[in-house]
Image (tube, rainbow, N blue to C red):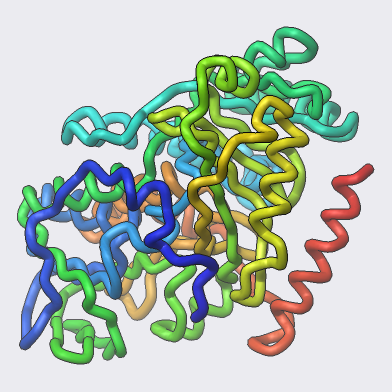
Length: 428
């Protein structure tokens, strides 16, 4: 699979503050209680929670810990899902939707707890703004505020417009927005590395540069790499958009989508005041949205643009620079120091895909842009399920997921066509 941009160009890689113990490639034959595949938040969280329950765990990562979306993302941490709760209510009923909503709030609390308990240096900050560009967005946001208060008892959403809005997002591009104090943001790679370090300290054996080449299902399940085999009572797949061909049945329900980010030089105090004076993170209401925040050293870290074919969009950097200048004229001359990209895993309905295969293989993926908190929760729920307490995991697993239409050859063109429709609708 092609990559969007070199990971070494990431701001996050250049500002890493967490060092792991040795995690050498795996050789030989091994037997453990649980084998975890994938060194992102899902895998590291599952490994940590399992080790804390007394399981012997090996975690295998094809490249380096945090190499995928967990270490490259916008670092936005929110309650909720990649889809509105109305879909969950319609599919699973209000009671289950309420339970799932509360677990998404738990996901944010769990993230904060891990940061504090393990002293992870990741620039943890509070405050989030959902920005409206059109009057249709305004109507949708106002209905959302009412729905969340009425059906879920959630009163953390506050409508802002005019000067009240510009006190948080100092841009004339938007017509208003929703302030969510319970939203958070952070340095995603340092957080992921912090989870991995905590897992090592709890007894998990981590192995980087250890790609899994085959899975032989059975009891125990056998995981093969080019140089090793691992037999385990349970297997956890936390690969998300990087699952590739390890499980073709699961692969058909998840689509890797390229997403891109840039980071400016550190901003002056005047430039900060002219952009995000209260240090909130922001995302707009478009289907293909823009999202951004300030880093710990006050760079604007801006994400947007998508690719479905593995190739970087033409004139990517220039287009993103132009968008920043349009949003914030004070940044017209700000230098761009970093450009990077990677894959996000989406599902057809944008609800995360949790489940089990062959009785002893658990998976969680397809967070659809909402993974930084949910992936940590997924690790906890997988550990609960393996320990025999599967009720909460199964609430997520109840959601039906369909294959992306068109098969391997046509699903990408069909998704591009659908996205074009939503891009046009965003202009209304």
